Image (cartoon, rainbow, N blue to C red; front, side, top):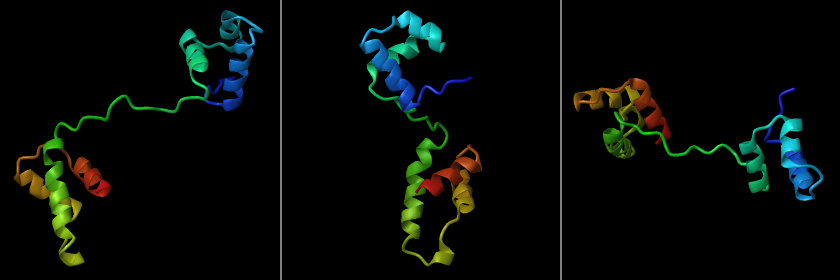
Length: 113
């Protein structure tokens, strides 16, 4: 059976058991089949920590053009809906400026704005 270490009940049970010194850390590790680092996390945090990305992912190709995308979208807010830029048209304009990335990156950047 694969244990989910994010279950609050399991987390609390292990913390209480170790806090009241009912069993040793080594015994808990052996019984639960967990690594020392996992046991240290259980003892350090009062509740299971969620997923955290260490740092935002870099955007080496699109990064220099993000301001241009934002500017195009801002300018389009003042024109009629039918005259606004689509993600495809923004991609074409960026290609004219020297962008060498893929369309999908531009499409995702436009949808986030």
